[in-house]
Length: 243
Picture (tube, rainbow, N blue to C red):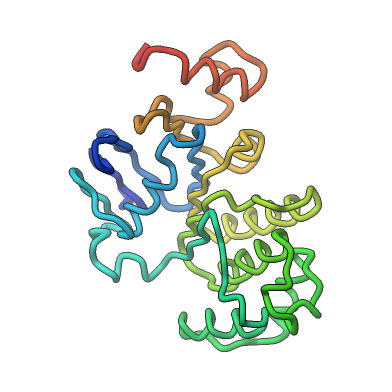
């Protein structure tokens, strides 16, 4: 049996007197496209921050590739795009990608970078401009380019479609399909349930810091007898836990 790429075991986290995560436990298997869904404030970003050791958990354990998340080596095989991606404003796009690739021990190859920009529908001349001149969508594409160019085994993407137009969203989904085809694992959050349904083979609905549902996206609709993911999602979070 393979080791899960990500394992959450009874993870709890509070800020002051507010309990944000409550005994969260689930696994993400190798090569899986995994979606984490929930309303604002459900604890999705906090769970990612705990996973990446940006904040300490109060109780429970997290493992990445079988290694405790507290050990830096556990994160050596992943690429991360935060929900609010803000690259240093004074860098050009080329500078940013060069630095990111250097941090990963990779060379900047203009042909590979150009092909990635084409795949993301980002004009190559944007590389010469400072990122402070980028639109929200252009900035998001730059962050996604850095992630995909890394060639890592795990992609942790927090709201990766944020700020993207329909064409760019289609481009990103095409790149995600390629990443999965080569055997990498995807862990991403999204408010767009249609994206989760299209991209993911497994999902968890996190509500009030608790997993309310774990399974295939379409099985959620079947479970609640609804045609749409949105209506099934509402039924899920309004139902009593374990009901």
